[in-house]
Length: 400
Image (cartoon, rainbow, N blue to C red; front, top):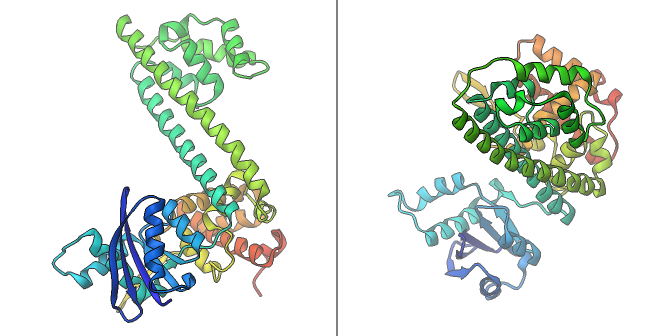
């Protein structure tokens, strides 16, 4: 790289600094967050070099229209952790002074002196970028559903505990339908067996077994502490408000899941990723979208493990040596690897044996899952590098 550009980005404008390889500040200026502003940035860069591939750009984000536009013109874009920028800032002003223009200059010098220590944004395919948008939207919708279900559970506990006994899982279509029809204990006590069967059919059930119907009738008929009627009715109305939100979220989750499954099936790596134990289309889509498909990004399996956060961190000084869980990581990928490891235990004899062996050595459940996740990531890396499907025999073969 011969030209280094630091951009302190904001919502409406961005501060820019240009520095050459010798550390000379060539320009500092501000651009607007629109096509005219980006054209001005490209024009100012063009005054100092015509080879855009020799330009390095440092920002504190790896997403957004500005990043996409920079990648499109062929410059090398680096996403810098804000914590690193804060540490570098002290090299220029120990007083703690800070400004947007100053941060742009810090970013440019940071890239000039320590580019090798920071991550260049991967050259992922458009398929992966699209898959990432769908995957994150689905994951966010699932988290919203969990939050709304928790809010409903807390609300029902205040006046309608029978509903929690009747429906341990509040997000099923049957539970949502019955609670909408009977949002208060009084309304629930008035439901008949025919009412419950009708609500079951409306929820998509072919038939509701007599044992289920009788259990619900028994639960709703049991005596419980009650609020005054007016208060109970008001709380029932509040329940319907939460239910409406939860229903909309449930529809959003299903719609996002359908789109994600279709997009995953179209990706060239889908067959290999889906061949690994415990990986379905949802987890597979998350793995591909978060890791990306740039083959030059991960030099080995250890690099994947570090990025996912399943590789531990060792802190050693003198006679002291401590091994800790990695906190600087891709949290979405870390959660995905945990779910993958948990699923793999029931799908792979080798994974199950490995997990049990770690537990036998005294590791707690989560630590053993992280170990298994690390092992599985090594197998994923091997399969993607060699373009071969997973093999249970080879994956867990004894080491000679």
